[in-house]
Length: 419
Ligand code: ADP
Ligand code: MG
Image (cartoon, rainbow, N blue to C red; front, side, top):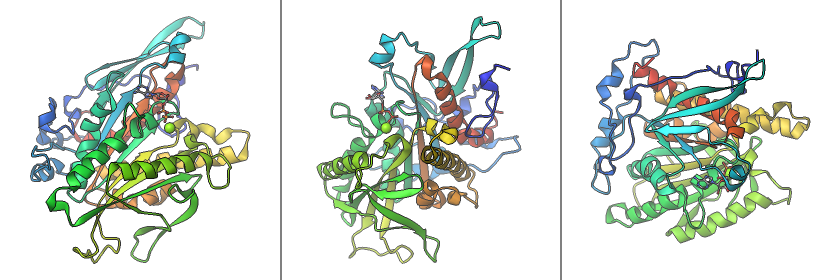
């Protein structure tokens, strides 16, 4: 059987050779009306599920509609989880090698034209179709991605929610470009921070302060990027709150402040305190922005950290690293196994979030443990941006990424009755 697409892949899910999903109800969007969402979903449609996985959909739409947005618009939100795909352009190198673009996108549907060989070596193309909440193609810039995916999270953050934005995908697919961006093309970090400090300046938020932490998870160990990549520990306390012991949190008052800090952090990330180079494709980088009550402000008895809202941006380890478990080098194998474990646990935790499950398997990995409060909080919201390369040579990784992203939203889709 030379059908590569038909087995079980590393992340443990079956790989159907053809996936055709054309359910309109699946294509709702986080876009505020003002930004032109055409696909606002009638939440009733989604509740008419006949599927055995049917579950109650958290009524975020209603919750968020009741909250007037800081910019005066009303945000439309139908789910606590939004899954988007971003296709990057072919790189110069790929173009010079005549590597083909195998991805086409139309609205919220994406097709992958997988080049394949029959047993007799004749060529054919297998077409795989997927749909997601939002698809960004090579013409979308970081601002477009920000407005549609991350800005709604920033608004929710200012309502006191625990919100998370993940960049998932193989190394080189555009995760860091999306999150950190470049000088010419600022990424989600910078665009979010600009909004955050603009909102923070309003008198109604004068009782809050903005704090930043930046750390990475490398082979199940935590390293503080704001403190020379110092090793730090994460534990659950007697009240089952997850605490990261010794994590630096810096009070910031401007985007400039944060960027100076992030630059140091990025440097620590690539060099490390011991000089031993940590490969950033094997670690998860986590930027947390916390809105805290001023200490003289209202104290939350349950929370000694005075947290009001929390926004986490996670630039995940390269998803292809999860397959390093057969590598000849033991260290690499162990790291691969840990990445595999964390990406599987992450998928399960996001799925649990969408089902409003009482049990969230956050203890399944260091990554999900660290993010516990963002998974179990009733106020949590998550956006996953699955980054893919368009090139034929990366087709297999691209399909793995799309299948992973598809699984993350699968239960929600079931609840819309599309299967
Ligand atoms: P990852 O972090 O997933 O390993 P990067 O973000 O470093 O990947 O992207 C790999 C290369 O592709 C970088 O040179 C980056 O500048 C470029 N790139 C990624 N996404 C885009 C995009 N949407 N537009 C233009 N260039 C991109
Ligand atoms: Mg990167």
